[in-house]
Length: 118
Length: 107
Image (cartoon, rainbow over all chains, first blue to last red; front, top):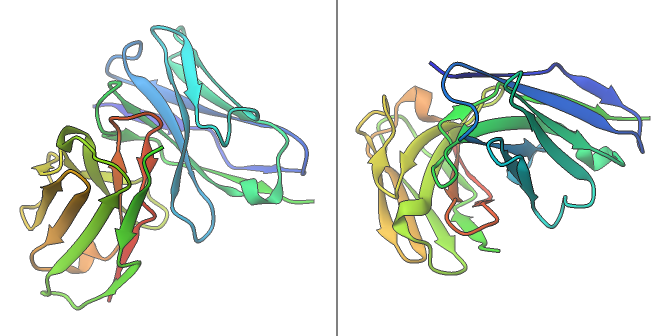
């Protein structure tokens, strides 16, 4: 049984940065890509990027490539999403999900609410 | 990137009725890489269908998927109360991975 456990809710000021974690419990870690998506209030799911721990390489969508860094720590089986230059429209529920690189996403974290407000 | 357009945006139905959800891609998607997810408020999305038509483990057989090329469909044969949710299609074969905008199935 694989479980992804995300860090808790965050409240941030505009212009600051936030780092969210996603720890994988059970299963294999290295060969599974961990992806990040977000859902803004009233909006759909938006894919941000992913990391493949075995390679340590990450890829990002064009929309986020200048503001997002996704990393993986194999020793703690934890993946991190850092989002910089926060704006009010970054207020959203952020999810991590795990899958083999070309597979659909079966395992999901519980979500982390990030609120950006002055 | 491949744009997925879902229709309708909202589907108002009653329990027992049939729901037909559409997902249209801006370019051809291999059927292997088309998935459907169910998303309820406050929960993580749940994988329903992979490879266009294969139900994920534990998914009731009232859910079915079909399609090819640029047109894909999720059908719920007879809605149960717990099926009222938002449904997303996803293509995960051609980077970047993309999602459709979602279809809300409401009572």
